[in-house]
Image 1 (cartoon, rainbow, N blue to C red):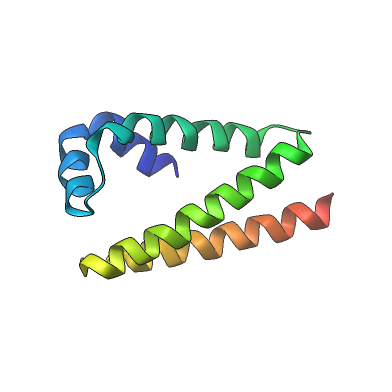
Image 2 (cartoon, rainbow, N blue to C red):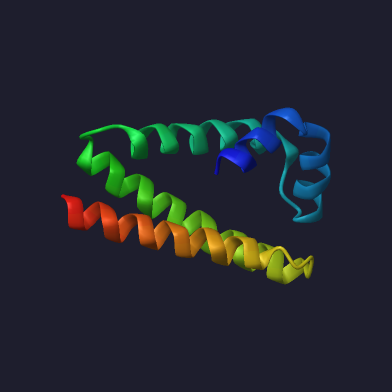
Length: 99
């Protein structure tokens, strides 16, 4: 997540090309980066149980949609989404065991 957020902010021109390949509007790059960053802050903060559940579900849908977006254009990036999804599920399982 940190890598993708940094790409959105520091490699904006490359991300515009990537988003237009997906047929997404380029103006959502910065808001999407901010939402991802806020999600990471929520996950790393102690407490905030309800907000963490919402964040996990948001990341869940983001990774599922990323998988299908990469699959549909055939750029081979879907495996990154699969790895992110597995890491998210692992994080969620450990979060539930701790709490």
